[in-house]
Amino acid sequence: MILLSCTGLSRSFDAGPLFEDIGFELHAGERVGLVGPNGVGKTTLLRLLAGLDAPDAGEVRLHAGARVALLRQQPDYVPGRTLFAEAQSALQAFLSAHDEMVRTAEALARSTNPTEHKALAERYDRLNELLRHHDAYHVDHRVEEVLDGLGFDRQDYDRPVETFSGGQQSRLMLAKLLLASPDVMLLDEPSNHLDIAATRWLESYLVKQPQAMLIVSHDRYFLDQVVTKIFELTGRKLTAYPGNYRTYWRLRQERYEQQRKAWEAQQEYIARQEEYIRRVHYGQLHRQAQSRRKALERLELVERPTFVEAPRMHFGEVRRSGDIVLHVENLAKGYDRPLFSGLSFTLARGRRLGILGPNGCGKTTLLRVLMGQEPPDAGRVQRGHLVEFGYYDQHLKLLPEDEPVIQAVWPDLDPSVTEQRIRDLLGRFGLSGDQVYQPVRELSGGERSRVALARLVVQGVNVLVLDEPTNHLDLWACDALEQALLEFQGTVIVVSHDRYFLNRVVDMLLVFEDGQVRVVHGNYDTYERLRAAAVEEEGPRVRRRDEPRPAAEPPAPRKRKRRFPYRKVEELEADIAAAEAHLRELERRLASPDLYRDGERVKEATRDFAETKARLAQLYEHWEEAVELN
Image (tube, rainbow, N blue to C red; front, side, top):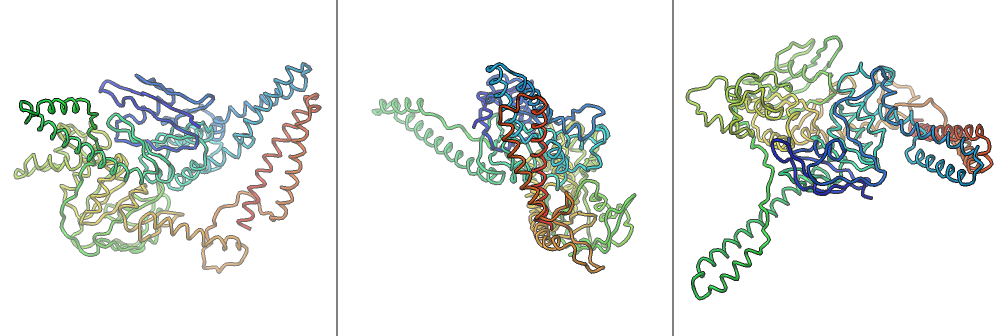
């Protein structure tokens, strides 16, 4: 079923048109990723679809009764309201529908007019079906599920929203949108402010939802896991590709090659025809030349294809370091609390080490300790022969704000180095024209990132230490950086939350998890396989948790934490059977016209029905947990 469609959509600003004459449809259950270079109008398009902005031309149509909602990037909440209450407010429409259903039932019980009685009964049925369809009889459980999944602690449920950080408030906006369950979800960078665990949960949650979704995201791994189609917005046009991100990236190259060959073939054909017309225009074949000219005039021209070109980044040749770049033994560091301890590993020349973990776990501190900028609390770091570190700061504070780009990249200008050589270097990182003379402070985040990367080339270091280098880069710049790092002859140490980047670039991982740092020899997929295998292996041990363990063995991690108290599976099955029987009895009573003669009995039966259904849903979950963990 088509939930949203648009035709002939155009939008311009003072700098010119963003997009022109675009159109598409969104169907129920369709999850579409919207990608494109920075500044092409992705967020503007979402605002048009949400009705928050008006197009210059074209129209947006919603299916009758369909609801559309856009994920707010700026937090919007009622001051003084608690976290739980603010999240619950997203379901206010269903809470109100429930109250209205009770009032309708009371009116139905008092009604003596057959026509009125029929209208009220139909309204009651519609409201009941609405609540059933949206599972609105279990509001609190749904709120808990979403808040827990997005990483909120239960002890924070009663805290006022204004006491949370900006990132946490943004997560709350996402929670409210998920709970509201609009028919069309417009998600602008939904995985921002989420750690890896919360992002995994969100991916799993979204793929189970029946709504249509249009998702803007720079998280390529997220797009791979979630979307079923990709829209590419570039060159003022929208192009659709089937499949996830990896499929799109392959198909766009294939489509471009096909279109380029078709355009080139037509250009060759046109050139041959024009050459023939020039040769015979005044000869005996004049009439045939005229015929060919008319055919050319009627020819439907193949449009020259456009292709978003990635900057051709390259870090150049560097001096060879010793075979061992870092040897780390029993490293420990902490401030008000321990960040890591007992960390040992060896990093060989040419390896690419990734560091992964939640915010605040100590990743950047570890980088500083490895480079010798901070002393460890315990253990030692042995640095290899001729090791030269070049540091990329995720906040880009090392760039001089007031200097022009050329001066920022090449601060000590060598008279023997020409300006053209510097411009060529900047061109490799996608900076050209007058940009090279702009002060750094006037550049966008992505442009500043590329300036900082170009500066590392000038330094000629053989160990690149990169702290979140993809934060401000678009998909094309990320791809170029990944290729450049794969070709780099030195060693790479990179902190990143970008799983796609880590998958493609690194061959060794340090993962901060559960207060420890785990060494993984492989990329992110390797880590995921090991993690899944560990969970699977621990399953039987979790079910035998009452068995005594050796004192020296740490407690095995459980596959999942208990939400309910321990009960035997047989007891739960008996309770489920009783609850199901009671629910059938209540359904029989609610279907009886005699019930509606007494308003109090209607309210009591309705309340009992909702409570029994909620209890039954909880019993099902309790039973599933008992089957898995007992």
